[in-house]
Length: 97
Image 1: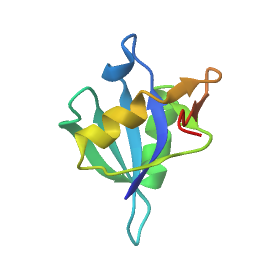
Image 2: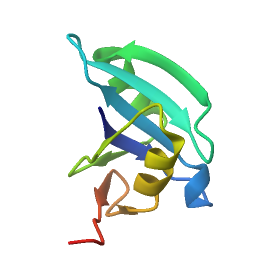
Image 3: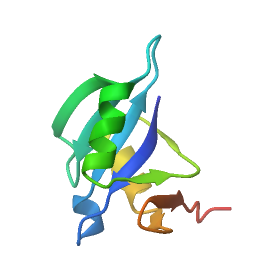
């Protein structure tokens, strides 16, 4: 499973960009864009990805949810539950709890 570590909010939430930390021996970040999540960049080493997150003003997710990176439905569901907290932070709001 992957973890959503950051989001670049777009006017339409479903068109936002996600940064996913992949589960593996080395930390890597995959960038993907909604709504279908077929437009992907990476994965990139974490240090390179961190620079990209800063340059493009991604919001770090304070309580990152786990998702299936190859399941557009999982990503689409999770993106609907991400809320901006500030210019640099977002929070996953699990409406089921």
